[in-house]
Picture 1 (cartoon, rainbow, N blue to C red):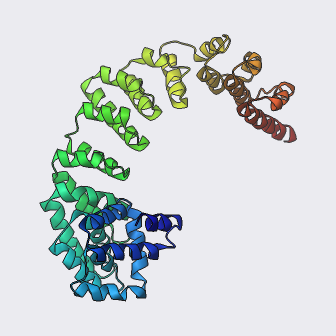
Picture 2 (picture 1 turned 45 degrees about the horizontal axis):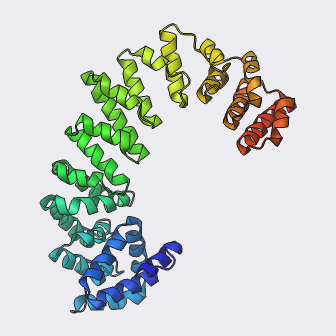
Picture 3 (picture 1 turned 45 degrees about the vertical axis):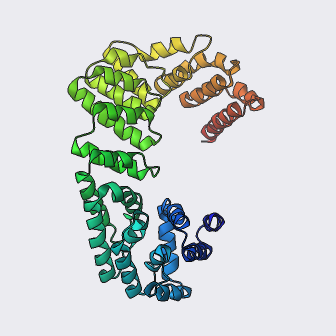
Length: 384
């Protein structure tokens, strides 16, 4: 089974028949544990379920699947495969059979049929799935979300997504917490959206997601939601905690919140931050507090070991004549500083061609790339 799955994945869907044959063999064995494992293997990848559907729909070789379905030899895997049969009556029969003894691992195959082009098939699947979602969300909501969110771009996929939201809005918090732990990135985002709209997501939970979740998009949403709540409730401590996060998308939200509450001095101290957006926000804060950001950058790049953010900040806000302050950094012992200095000189349009040309022999590839880019701009400018 594992070999068949690997071959199918490596062929990018061109060897689906190998997987179907393996599934049929497992089904004929009658081994409940193997059948369950086969379902889990397939349904953990929603795209694979749809690939199977497309393949089975067009294969005349699956005629015997329909024949087995009406007999006594059809197990759950055969029934699931038959739900994608080219004959609508076979598909409808398979759906009816699955709904008679519903199992969560079979749900993705029912969800695919909710987008079926034949209304009799589609209607049976829709009525059955809606009942399962509303009667037992603890069992069916998570597998439904993992597949239905993948199917939402399909024609006629909107109905399933609407029912998913309807079931989720009424689901217990514990069920939505299960969705938050899904490895399919769209599912935690969906659960977070539902809980945010329901208004039962606590501030501490938002902060935890913003600080620790591995999904950048979800971190950003959680950071925005937590910041909004913290601003409304005056929780400056929360904003400061988020502002120390290592993820830029969270920090910018928190700092924007601090700005809304008037904490400009704290933001102005981030003029040399690694983030372009945060440096821009810090320059605005510096202006409001009477600090000359450009003068600050000029001093910051003149020390022995300037930060990369200070070099970038001078390039973003300085003038062409400020380039001379960066010339000594072209021979700095740290490659990242040399590369940053070359990039800043390129932005300031103050590239010392001879000095930068010699850097093409620099042992650091990072520096060489920066030098090539700077010299390329200078060459185009000269030709113009």
